[in-house]
Image 1 (cartoon, rainbow, N blue to C red):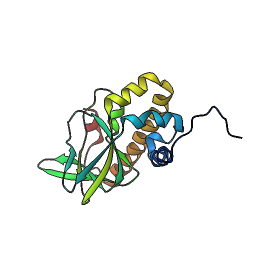
Image 2 (cartoon, rainbow, N blue to C red):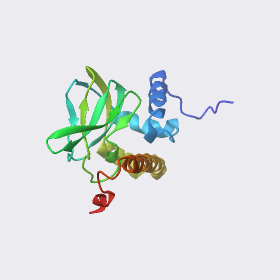
Image 3 (tube, one colour):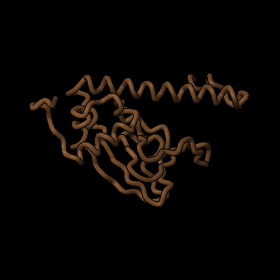
Image 4 (spheres, helix red, strand yellow):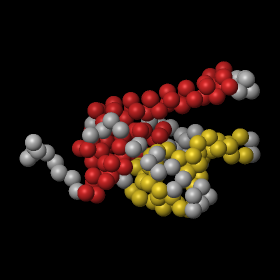
Length: 171
């Protein structure tokens, strides 16, 4: 039975919620929690070879891919080494969920065009400040994301026969 006092959402809002549910950091949120992000979301179109942000830039926004592909790269000497390709329904710039962080990789558009949703860091922090439950759910997802990355890193290290030293991570 429908609750007559529950908030109703437009078809466009429902489409936004369906899209956000694809993204790890929003998977635990209910519609009313995701709705807090809608006013902060900005659509932006990027083109092939356009840099979304550079490594070491301040982490000023979370990016959600609606269409297209973005390559995440790290600077190795004078080259960019690809670490991950991000596609529709995925996010990058995840450390913008944390306070006072800098980018650890460079994000470059590899498709002809990419439609991204940009959520500014300040808006995320305002939502976190006003809703500790939303922050807790998203931080849990972020922790799982980083844990999965660590698992992949250690697996890759084990399979690389020690071409790099893990203790360098902590120096």
